[in-house]
Amino acid sequence: MTGPLVPGVRIGHHQRTGRGWRTGTTVVVLPLGTVGSVDVRGGAPGTRETDILDPAATVNRVDAVCLTGGSAFGLAAADGVMQVLEERGQGHPLVTLPGAVVPIVPAAVIFDLGRGGAVGHRPDAAFGRAATRAARETPPVQGAVGAGTGARSGGIQGGVGHAVELVEQDDGTSVSVAAVVVVNSIGSVIDRATGLPWYPGDRPLRAPSAADLRRLHRHLDAQAVPTAPSPVFNTTIGAVVTSGVLTKAECRRLATVGHDGMARAIRPVHGMFDGDTLYGLATCADELVAPAGRSRLTRLDQILTAAAECVARACTNAVVEATATGSDPAYRDLCPSAFRTRRTPA
Image (cartoon, rainbow, N blue to C red; front, side, top):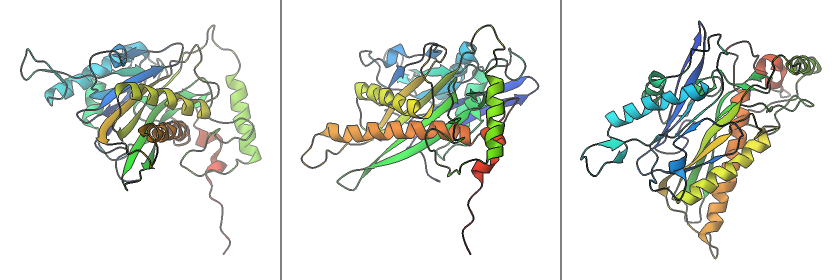
């Protein structure tokens, strides 16, 4: 894929590794007029500006979403996103102060404190500024980049993944649906029994060799030994974006159904030590065309179905495409045989 995930949507990463660092920030910069809401499912979320996304709240627009490491400290990265957008004049206009804007930048964090060695090394406003300035419409890099740099999923390297679907309409137009997800889950994307993802991603894989499966089991067994007095906090966060015209309440439903995709790809999910959060966003560039003889809600239902599919694939892509950035091995390190393509007969 070479085009944008959703037209007008730009995604940027910034990260640091080495010398005590292993963390980063991912920013989803949205076109003017984007409507948004949110659904928080995990028991230990770290978020900013979620109340304003309630369908009953006044402001409809969202200018960007900040996904970042650093636990609650990392919420400071959103300050940098706001600074860049304010410089560009993008934000909620202040009627009493002509020319002044307040960018609406909801944020969510993952717990990756100390994974690089120094607890004090975490994203701040500079990370948000850098990720925002790096944002492009071209599909972003997947794996252990941006907010996924210090991510861990089921005891192996986590990361950032994305996926996109097109919902075709009767008049020949299509509506884009995409997901960008940072997987830092207590649960696993990989089925221990088969060594393959619970839900297929975009990269074709084959069953790992017996030796690789044993290596995977040895690593997972070692991870299961209690080494801390309390569970480690984790979180899977992300955004589902569509080009369709949706209301704020429908964006909430988009986020809600997106969590179904998370549950397909990560097991277990939405636990008391997860902070699972999904934003639902609509750029409102494409009208939803009702199928012949049916209501507009039928088309909306297709958008929601695509959202769950995209989130599930994005979760898998995040882990499968990751390379190790620290002490946690990546899936490709434990099961390299899964990536070997089958030879075709001559």
